[in-house]
Length: 257
Ligand SMILES: NC(=O)c1ccc[n+]([C@@H]2O[C@H](COP(=O)([O-])OP(=O)(O)OC[C@H]3O[C@@H](n4cnc5c(N)ncnc54)[C@H](OP(=O)(O)O)[C@@H]3O)[C@@H](O)[C@H]2O)c1
Image: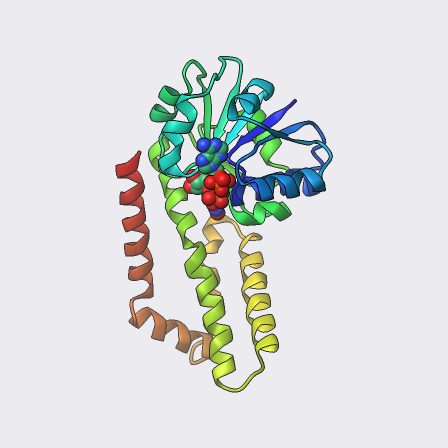
C-alpha cells in the first residue's frame, strides 16, 4: 500500500518517523514538496520516501492520503485535488469537521479524522480517531494508543485535551526552575523533574478507568507531604482552572466544526 502526505510539517514528520522506525513501515510514502528541508531530510533518512513535485502527484499515487496542512489552508489545498472514491483520507487537521472535509474531498467518502501527538515519533501517545475504522486502527495501533469514537462531538473532547501539551511541559519546566532557584544545578533539576513526571504518568497507564480516580487519594497519607501539597493546590482552584480552560478550547473546536 502506498501512503501520501499533503503537508510535510511537524506532525507529518513525527508520524512518518514513527511508522518507519517503530512500525517498520517500508512501503512507498509520497510527500509533498512544500517544507522542502523537511521532505529532503526524510527522503534522505528513508529510502521508501519520494518527494512529489505537486500535491496532485501525491494524491494520484497514494492509496491512503494523510492531510497535514494548517486549518486555514485545508479548504483551498484539498478542493484543488483529484481525490478518488477508492481512496481513504486521514485528516490530522484540528477543527475541520467531517462534513466540510467530505465536501472538499468529493467524490471521496472514506474520510477519517485523527489526532496524533508528537511522541508518535517514538510509537507513544494517544491517537484519537473518528469515526472508527478497522483498517486504519490496525495500522495506527503500531505507533500509538488508538482511541476511536464515532460521535464527532465527543471526538472534540480529545481535541480539547490535546491542548494540554504546552501547559504540561511548562509545569515540568517550572518544577525544574523552582529547584534551580534554590541552587540545584540545571541538569540535575531537569533530569529529576522529567523522570518524575514520566514515571508517574507511566503508572496511570497501568490503572483501570475506575482506579485512576483513586490514585491521588491513595498517596495522601493523613498529615503527610502529598496531602499538604494537594490540599494547597486544590484551595488555589487548580481543578476549576483545568476544567474552565478545557471548556474554552472545547467551545472553540465546536464553533469551528
Ligand atoms: N503539531 C502537532 O502536535 C499536531 C497534533 C495533531 C494535529 N495537528 C494538526 O496537523 C496539522 C499540521 O500541523 P503541524 O504542526 O504539522 O504544522 P506545520 O509544521 O506548520 O505543517 C504544515 C505543513 O503544511 C505545508 N503546506 C502549506 N500549504 C501547503 C500546500 N499548498 N501544499 C502542500 N503543503 C502545504 C507547510 O509547508 P510550508 O512550510 O512550505 O508552508 C507545512 O509543511 C494542523 O492542521 C494541526 O491542527 C498538529
